[in-house]
Amino acid sequence: MAVRGARMLFGASVAGAYALVLAPVLAVVVISVFSQEIVSFPPEGFTLRWYANAWDKREFARGFVTSMQVALVATAIGVPLGTAAAYALTRARLPGKAALNTLLLGPLAVPGVVAGTALYLFYVRAEFWVDDDIKGTTLGLVAAHVLLTIPWTVRLVSAALAGLDRSAEEAAANLGARPLTVFRRVTLPMLRPGVVAAGLFSFIQSFENLELTLLLVGPGRITLPVAMLNYLEFRVDPTLAAVATVQIVLVGALMLITDRFVSLARVV
Amino acid sequence: MGTLQLAGLSRRYGANTVVDGVSLDVAEGELVALLGPSGCGKTTTLRMVAGFVEPSAGTVRIAGRDVTRAPPHGRDTGMVFQSYALFPHMTVAGNVAFGLEMRGIGRAEREARVLEALRLVRLDGLGERLPRQLSGGQQQRVALARALVVNPAVFLLDEPLSNLDAKLRAEVRVEIRNLQQRLGLTTLFVTHDQEEALTMADRLVVMERGRVRQVGTAEELYERPADLFVANFIGRVNALAGEVAGPGEFRVADGTALPCPRDAAPGMRATLCLRPEKLRFQPWASAGVPAVLARTVYLGGQTEYHFTLAGAPVMALRETPPAGDRLRGLQPGDRVTLDWLGEDARLLPEVAR
Ligand SMILES: Nc1ncnc2c1ncn2[C@@H]1O[C@H](COP(=O)(O)OP(=O)(O)OP(=O)(O)O)[C@@H](O)[C@H]1O
Ligand SMILES: [Mg+2]
Image (cartoon, rainbow over the protein chains, first blue to last red):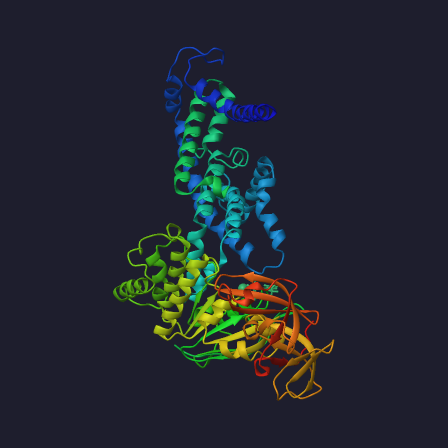
């Protein structure tokens, strides 16, 4: 009897936790398809008007494209860099390894707004040196977002490296493979789940980032989260919920696709 | 193919010397087993030959060439790992082809040799599988094929059978030995299973705490062990401490006289070693060495008889006597007479604990 009670309690807690996590997401989706401008309950009047409205506001579409571009490029740069760093940190005999590791995970600990401000100030200074624009350019934005991708990559790839069976690498060397060939033909393929997961998380981190980005965007180069914040300054209506729903669906789809290639539950 | 020579090979970790001056010559086509208890330095020795562990002192020569400082990929050894270490993301054929690819062998020849190697280990038709789709025994044979296919100068095996069940182990043991002899592979084989070593190796190296205790054929080690450690490690042995009293006579502490080789120098303190199958016995008669039966262990075709001789345990192993034989009637506590040929006993300088 007691066991059954405990099991029910456990089940209820799990259901509660899921509800807590999913409720805001569901609320956003629900709000996006009903007609009231001011959120009320129960909702009435099913409509796709807010999606049409979001489409009409070109800043959202442009923001989406900018966010995509920045996230893809930042991931493409950050994941190889982070992987190399993780490899060096796990394998090489480096002095000050622990300090280096902390440094690379640093961006996770610094609040985005602080990091954004610091970068803004740094860019202002750097513009003076190079005598060209940095803040407000795609280059400046991508460079900042690479900072977001590195800690995730270092963490995920380090974990994958720690769990790697070294004897397969030794077998390759024994069969005549030089160190670089061993890395390319054996180590890297065995790390694939970790690297793919790192790519996914890096992309999401960059795509969704608001705080770090806020000060670094320029006219015509607004990312989607910043575009949403701008919109919010003038109006509060379910258009934002519609945009957010699109974002949720995109990220969800990305996770599902990735999960088909590597089991995320295993690497994260 | 080639020879393998180790000279004064040592490895220290901090203050800990885990391999201590190992010297060994393996002739072309010979299979030598490194045998010893866990932690005695077998794997470390093998890994120094393969180039994964750097020796603190000594040299490794393969086919006459000094490779002590050469990297693993420049040594031409073929190693089979205890965990098999297959490449999980490559097919069986991809695994076997890897070493050929590294040697720059063209696709056509590569494919032919992979097929040949897979046939050799009786895995034909499984080339397109992934390692995880194979049983443990099949994976083990892929690992063998992968190492064999490149025709290494020296073939290295680190307890390749320890993950297999007893029946498969016996089978694969014969397979490896047959392949090794057919291909004439110079082989160093690590094991801590003495039966494996005795049945497979041309010569055995018994190691203890990083040092070589004795090198020899199975027969030499069994019949003429150099010391008590080897005598105990290879097969089973009765060990009795005492002193040589006269020609062919050995006395233990309480004065009981035992047969020993006639050429032993009188007055020498030693341990008398006797293999269980050399010990004969019969129900008490007035002449001979007196002892008391402690217990018998019936093993089917053979039976172990455990006795107490002058306070020390000794054991005899013989064919189970037929029903009705008078030995069948022996009960624990019965007095018996022991006997053996003096020349069958061996005197070792150390004193048994
Ligand atoms: N990298 C290392 N650092 C410190 N000590 C080590 C290292 N590698 C091995 N040793 C020590 O060296 C000794 C010999 O190890 P080795 O693996 O060669 O033993 P082994 O004979 O193969 O034993 P087993 O039969 O258990 O495999 C052990 O005591 C081990 O703890
Ligand atoms: Mg070992």
